[in-house]
Image (cartoon, rainbow, N blue to C red; front, top):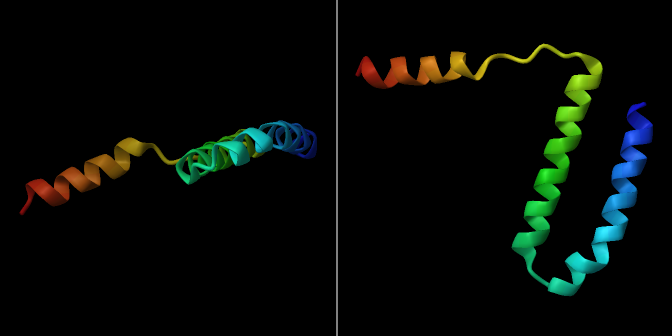
Length: 69
């Protein structure tokens, strides 16, 4: 399943590649690549049913660090 979705994402990327090259804007290419990689990572986490820590834990630790000083 993961391989099939990766192939579909690769097909979409190959379709979008000429438009990204034509714009010659590295920021657009970076944003596109970043969002694509984030999507692949989230998809992999969902498919593998990996446990994900709650962001509230990290926010609480940061706030405790700031407020205790």
